[in-house]
Length: 531
Ligand SMILES: Cc1cc2nc3c(=O)[nH]c(=O)nc-3n(C[C@H](O)[C@H](O)[C@H](O)COP(=O)(O)OP(=O)(O)OC[C@H]3O[C@@H](n4cnc5c(N)ncnc54)[C@H](O)[C@@H]3O)c2cc1C
Image 1 (cartoon, rainbow, N blue to C red):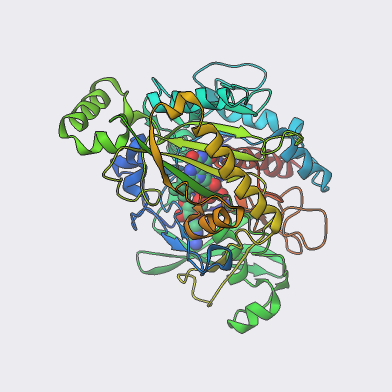
Image 2 (cartoon, rainbow, N blue to C red):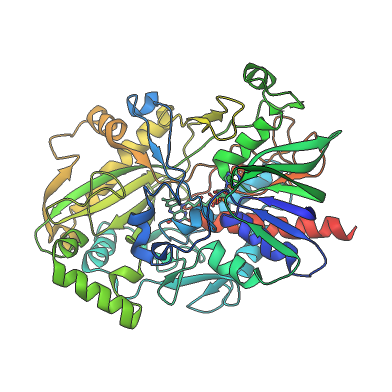
């Protein structure tokens, strides 16, 4: 069991690394994944999202600690636990964020992470159905496709945004993110293209790549200050693997910091309190937790055009099934959110500060049973929250979940932003194109009008849109967990490569950025190997 590189976690980022680091055949690579192989068919059928949302075999099914900003509610945080990680269970939306997000990372001292630096990695990863141009690639492992025949209501949502004075945009990953339009999805020929499908599958036959599933990493061990051993449990047995060059944590924003803490890198008082021997006092590990909070405006629809209606009718379900089986098209071949918008809550802003996900269905919570009436949902989130949370181990047991404190809506700026966002949602719904289909506003309901009432609605009903990030922050300062080459400060032979390294959350969904981070990291790692 000795390798050049050991990668912990086969998610959006880990599968990219497994492919790129093993490509030359020169390095022996081990990829360890706590979850199973991705054989469950619903992991590959785009609409399967609802089937995996609460599935304990493929999902860590976490809950946060009760959050004061959410009026003391615990928020359900699903995370993928399978080859592909969260990219195997996510909502499929392909969005990179805004140029300014990455330029901001660079101004924080992270050399090599400006937009101009990272764009080539987005392009290298991508196989866009629309072909290549200055912003897109058509040869990469990550399939990206259009929604074929968007739902009538999704088209009405886009039309209403335009009627409300916002620009149309049919490429959120092109020259500008601003405006309303259709999402592109991480699908290819009607199937999900997770990182396991796009990156890992083509590399599986390489003799220098070993993939172990059901392998739960418990901790890392060090020789002096050098990380060289990974201890994991598989089928009830404790096993060890030795890394001659590097160990790379790609366990995601919740478990990469947990593994650092379990391995003695974290706040000394916290580690001592749980009987973990302190290797390095790094209080920044697990701090800087950021997430997008979605608040959902639900309308009752006056026509049976919604997925709620489809799911109530056996013949419509049959038609959907036939369309999928014979043509790989129809509602089963696309995600739940077919349209969206990146908008400014105030005209004087220099870039969008909110994002809409529009779904032609409604439920009390994402993935919960659909309402028994025709309904659709305009979910809105603030793109760059200033609220910060943290997470920490609660025991030295690697199977115990970390305590996650999201800190949602803990700043006045974020409170104002979410209220403004709800008002934008109402403005869009009032335009003729969408108003044509509306019976009434089911949630929040027009009786809630004042700012304090809308804020209370956000606190009572807001949920994650699944983008926790930032917990092993990259930075040039001493408190940062990793440097701009993603090496963990204060030790050798160890990097973190996943969403946890984001200094600030990007303005959009986080799968494409995680893939980009890993693409760039693979060049950094291989460049060191050549020295
Ligand atoms: C329900 C849902 C919907 C989402 N929708 C979208 C969307 O539409 N578009 C978008 O861009 N993003 C979306 N996201 C977010 C996006 O998928 C994630 O941000 C991204 O996949 C994170 O990548 P990662 O590599 O950081 O971590 P992950 O992909 O989560 O990978 C971490 C991997 O590490 C494994 N692991 C963890 N701990 C251990 C351990 N101790 N030992 C071994 N293995 C371990 C996990 O099982 C997992 O496979 C969604 C996420 C979820 C959960």
